[in-house]
Amino acid sequence: MEKGARHRNNPEKNHPGGSQSETSHDTGSGGGGVALKKEIGLVSACGIIVGNIIGSGIFVSPKGVLENAGSVGLALIVWIVTGLITAVGALCYAELGVTIPKSGGDYSYVKDIFGGLAGFLRLWIAVLVIYPTNQAVIALTFSNYPVKLGDQQNYGGKEQKNYIRIPSVLQEALLLTWVNCSSVRWATRVQDIFTAGKLLALALIIIMGVVQICKGEYYWLEPKNAFEVFQEPNIGLIALAFLQGSFAYGGWNFLNYVTEELVDPYKNLPRAIFISIPLVTFVYVFANVAYVTAMSPQELLASNAVAVTFGEKLLGVMAWIMPISVALSTFGGVNGSLFTSSRLFFAGAREGHLPSVLAMIHVKRCTPIPALLFTCISTLLMLVTSDIYTLINYVGFINYLFYGVTVAGQIVLRWKKPDIPRPIKINLLFPIIYLLFWAFLLVFSLWSEPVVCGIGLAIMLTGVPVYFLGVYWQHKPKCFNNFIKLLTLVSQKMCVVVYPGVGESSGTEVINEELEDQQQFINQPTASEDKDSVEHPQP
Image (cartoon, rainbow, N blue to C red; front, side, top):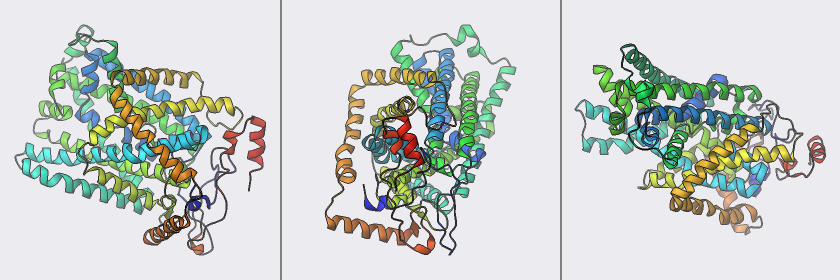
């Protein structure tokens, strides 16, 4: 573990999963401390979940589910069941989030339950590919849709699109990084506004669908027609339909990445989940119902931008609303992903799994500026890669594999530590149902695309030597340690950042309190020993 990452306050030591107390903020000269501020209330928490789940997919290409389901009726069932499974997974994460109330989400849970190497591999694949590529793709979608609007109005063309696209992505990434670096409150307000905007756009689609039904345009919703197959379904295609639906619900766990910044996380984390997941499920199902009131399944499958086609059919001169809605939706998606993924990198650095400077926050703004800049730079670097979508396919299997590992960790923690405080304690039937569902999808993915899944596993396993060289090996050459210290000091001065809990008056001094023994309760053999270790933490 890096030396710099070990000398910090340990706010979690008095609770088995993290701090139960409010995070303080005092940057006055009286020797107070700086810390991540608790500024995310219930509304903003819902905005983070909803805003990260609803990206461009429901507007652009909900046809993946329909194409594999083979009928409108079965596709709607897939959307409903996938929403229910997502809710089950979110309940499991809610219990983990209040049992181990640390930012970092599944990375923190996997690390604390299964050990440092497992947690590092989750972090490695996220840092290396998952979040930079996802944010780059969302940003490219944002840049593409205003141009499509211009093309639709005969103001653009191919040359204009090539000229505008990359600069607009750069401007978007830099603007949102600046907003997130400036204030947590600003970032959450941006998220709230754009989430409300995309919900209004989807509400418009649903209302238009209701109007169509009132006009008698519900041919594909009648049972005899809804289950009229246009391709013979089989277990493989149905599994692919569920996998496509699960991708559309991706982002449901992002609130767990910012647990330490939630106001009253023991109440607001589960409440936000209970509100957001049913809301998204309702919106997804009825948006798809609305689509088939204006388009046949064949028309829907032929469209590359379903919401745009829907708008052209029903909105007339107001059809421009749909491309703008997609652009705004993706803008909010980039903001939410930037906000939450930077906290993942922050948590990884705090545990010594990433350079320690990424665990520092601004002395006045209390935002993790180095982690945000790292997230922005890694996203922009992905724009020069021609194989972004290929990389996503390779690691998608690994991403969903770790969802299952995290939920399995919930069962392991129940068995190893049955007596630790759990403000929320769900029935073990829920994680079992979730694991059975994901086992079905992952086994099928491995069977149908063994090469893609194998490459994804290989990319993940490249993190093993990195872990042993960078984290496990503590006796590194003195020249290397001096170089890292110098680089960290320069970065601190440039960004005006310190470790959380370090007073402004102390400059770049750190408090000599080790983090190596935190979370020892998970590794103790008995519950009674765990109680003793919690009541009498090691200095």
